[in-house]
Image (cartoon, rainbow, N blue to C red; front, top):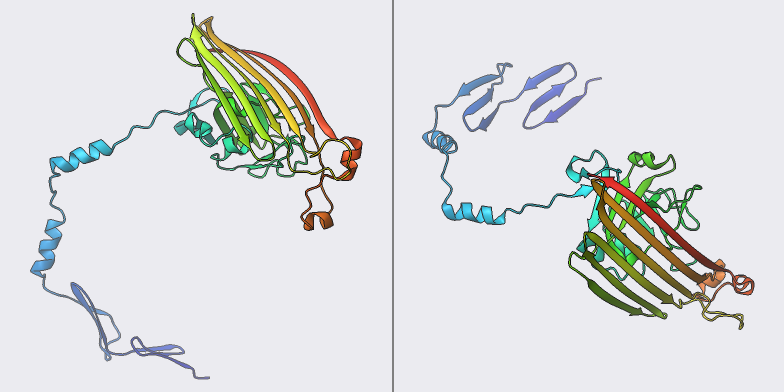
Length: 346
């Protein structure tokens, strides 16, 4: 079988045979000629062009930078502050970290943070996702790179530390009821396999630290947050430094009525009310060539659990609480207090 494939600008192809056609390709300094009587490729250099040589010489000549341009570049230079990561149990500069680590500190934590929901403090951390159930009796679902995404209640698969004190129970569940979100000053996240140094079930580590005490003698702040569905948050904070001892204390109470209507006609209405009171205090001082820190925290939480609804009621747009939960009085009532002492040398 004789098959022929033709290309007008290249030549004629035939099985086992190639017969070029006359063509000339120009590329600046040389000409490639393909005569029909000669199958070999001939190359002929053109004489140098003055314009081309002049452009090549000018491209290698350095040009001085004007003083005005140099001054503009110096004014645009910004020196970034050094970020030190402590989630690895020893301070390490962020640019020397061999692990996937992120840090939020100072204004990055406080801006847009009402102190009510934890996702407001974690929204800037890559790889960290918070699913808010808007049910204080079950808490938020936090996942790092997918770890913890299937938790039915609480936080699982993630190691959490609050002011250096572990908030993760031996069974792998973490509770954040005692975390004073409005008092946070720093959040660190460690993602990936490096989190195994905190346990074989840790898909990531979150470190929460309270804001540093005021460097002056004494400072007092008060915060009020109000919103829909009966949301009200009151906070009072006092901090200062005296005689080489830095101290900080905070008291917060949050109330939330929620939106789950009580359709049974008995009991609380709405059946999603929650009240949480937290106390948080700490002091640091120099001792034995290092820093001695004392942390105290406590929480009193009472939250009703309206439960989930069947698909048919959910599709109808119903906001009522599940009748079984209302009749059984399903709720979360927790009281917790803890004290921690730590010393860090250097």
